[in-house]
Structures are given as C-alpha cells and as structure tokens.
Image (cartoon, rainbow, N blue to C red):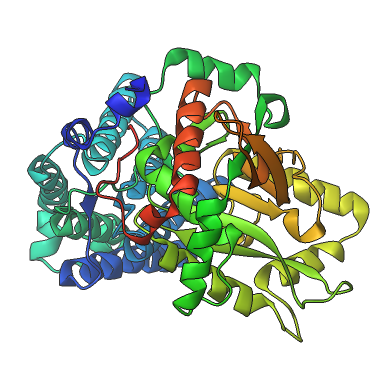
Length: 487
C-alpha cells in the first residue's frame, strides 16, 4: 500500500483531529447580539467622550482609533464569521491588549510596573487566542478570566457606582462595555460536535493547510518556488471500447450530450475519492487541501460557431459524485455560458474590467494580487471566478482533430493538474494467436505539480484512473468509501 494512503485512513484522521476542538458562536444566540451591542456601544461612548475632551494626534490614534477599530473588528468577525472562524477574534483582542499596554505606559507609573502590566495584558490575549483556537478543550477558565477582569474594574469604581456619579464613570464606561461584550461572547462559545474539520490559523478560504508533511517536501517547496519548474508530464493512452459502449448506454438513458469528457471527469473525481492528495494545492510555499471540494475548470464556447468567444466554466464537484452528477453539473455549467447575449459570465465581466486598466497599472494590480494570494488574502468571490484557482483544468483537443497538447501549469494561482486529451485514433493490433484486430484509443497528457505529492502517488492514482476508464460502469454509483487527506 502507498505510504500516503496508509496515512490517510479515517481512524487516524479522526484520532488526530480530536486533539483540538473548534469553537463557534451562533448568531441566533441572545448573548452574541448583547456582545455586539456592548462592543459597538463601547466604541460610540469612547468617541463621544474623546470628542468632548479633546486630544493630541498621538492620543487620538493610540487611545481612540486603536480601541474603536478593535471593537468594531471584533463585532464584524463575531457576526460574519463567528460560526466558522471565531478564532479570528484573537486579532482584535491582541490589538486591545496593545491599547491597554500603551495606556498604562502613558500613565505616570514606574517603568518596571509598566513592564509587568504589558506582560500581563499580552499573556491574557495569548491565553484567549490559545483557547478560542481550540487548544483548550473547555472555555470556563476564559469565562472566569473575563468575569474577573470585569469585577475588578467594577470594584475599583464601586464608590462612583453607588453614588451614580455618571460624570466620574464616563471615562471608564468604554472599558466596562468592552469587557461586558467580551464576557458575553465567551459565554456564547460552543464546540462543534459534527466531527468535521473546521478552519483554524493558517488555513485559507479555499483550502486547509496540511501540517504533517514530510520535511523534505516542505524544503522542496522553497527550492522550487514556481509551478512551471515543478511540473512533470505523463503521456498515455486508453483503449475506449468500453467507454464508447458506456457512452451509448448513457445517451439511450436520456443523457443526450454525454461524452468522453464526462467519463474522464467522473473517473478523475472517483480517483480523488481514493487518493485525496490529488486535490491539494501549493500557495505561499505551503501545501493545502481542498478536501471534498473538487474545483474543475474548462474552456467553453459561448456559441457553437468558429467565430464565437470562449469563456470558462468552473464547477464544484464532490468525491461522492457519480457520472450522472457530473453530467448534470457540467450541463448546467455549459448552459449558463452558451448563448449568453449580454455581459457574459462573471469571469468574462471581470476580465473585461481588468482589460480596461492601463498596462503599467495593470502590472501593479497583478503583482498586488500575487502578494495577496501568497498570504491567502484574495477575496473569496475573486477565487470563485478565477480559472487559475482550481483543482484541475481539462482541455479537449479531440474537437480540433489533433493529438493532446502538453499544457503548461500557471504560476499565477494554485492549479496543480492540467489534463489534455486528443481525438480518437484506430490501431491494428496482433493478438497472441496471430489474429489482427482494430481498436480505438484516446491519447491524453497530464501535467502535474510534483510538490503536492510524490511521483509514486501520482503513478498509482493515474493507473487507477485508467482502470476506471476501462470499466466505466463503476462510475454509476458512489464510492464505497471516501478517504480523507492527512492533517
């Protein structure tokens, strides 16, 4: 058995993933909205108090803008991404720790005492990050810590509270409201119990970072930083007697446009179900997995004529998809593009907008996108329409009547596999008894990024795909088991 496949059994995966938990908050919870309300109120009160008091530029930026922005970022993450990426609230918490450290440093106290406070604030923020990142399996210590901080602040101003001296409480109200909001948010935290993987630090919006790769593979990502210099190509052919019979059966069943592309794609999807390493990609010298999201791209004619424009269809497939699922999804992708009269697809609209940018500025835009992509900062809606960010790209040379080309991999983006297949060809073969038979073949090339898996893994996976192509009836039903990628 392949070394990687031995590592990819579900028991190992489940056992490893149970080392950490994943926290989330539900927007339907009253505590979440109380937390958001308290944090927004903290920002408003701080601005109102500061405007009435007046301040110099340093105070404005460090004592007003910094905590206000931190509270608003916390609210944004809480309400928008709290169900999947609550751990990101660690960022505004660290910003607030810096704010409190600067605040105590600006007070007239001993420098050694100021240093102690800095350490304490950063330690609290670190403990918060460790907890919400799932390394602490329950949050009761964090609840005690937040409640304790709120009680200390209330106790230190007990005289003003008893006397309802609002003028004296006004300066401390932003901090009271912030701690109250933080306590409500921590109380609203829940643990995902679905046994599924949930994002954490280092993951991208389009992939999960793999953290248990072989050290040599990690080093190779820096030695070969681009996809072109890391590409390997294999050229092979498959006998299609079984494929043609299978295609005829599907067309009789009503899948009128079913063809060789559907068989290739359904076979590749089935291969990913058994060899999930093929659904990895490399970005920023780190290897990520798309897990069950197989993103397929293909060039499509907007109309069936020689002078028609070309567009890109991008599909989201699952390892459990059958040939029927592939057909329906591909048909929907084609139908959404072919015959469009105005505007074109989202990809066409984006490409048209980019083409209007002057050349020098456009070079800067592309450079900026590369930098953002390196750090995983490209917005998800751009990743969705980008044909350069996907699992695999197919191109059919059969319609052009030529053999498959060896297509390059793009350095921009993160697509690791490019498949090209050509037209059918007939070959006369001599059997062992001397009989001459004529058989049909289709040649295809597969260009791969060798940094995501090794050559043996690719070879094993592609041989399995060829066996599926020889017996495509297996693609009518979902796989008995879907193998998960390593952590």
